[in-house]
View 1 (cartoon, rainbow, N blue to C red):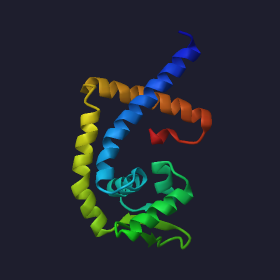
View 2: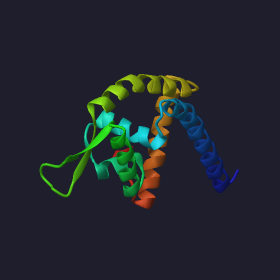
View 3: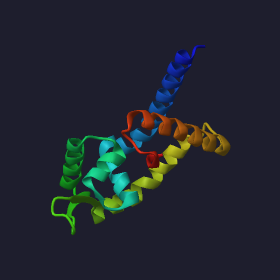
Length: 153
């Protein structure tokens, strides 16, 4: 197989695997009434704590307008809130509310269980190897685009 053919095959397999895992996990978040974007925001805030809106945008890979829309939806449901930045009046943080944190305390263990289930097709050694390979791929590709820093991997 040519270099180009092999690259295309890798891209197809990588994309299909990612979609299959995401579909399995997404089913649970949708059962809970969250879109994948809403869950991504809540998950980022759950694990990282309050984040500047731009940081949320970079973590979940959506546009700034997309972050605004998602935070608006979560605010309307009482799951997230915007907070003032004490050092910069122009900056705003997004944070989970107490209700949002409680909901994620209940929701996240099942999310993690489903993710573990979906990735059980690889043993621990294979998962570690896949992490290393995909990190190397991501670092290389980000160097080509300049859009994502190495620290993202």
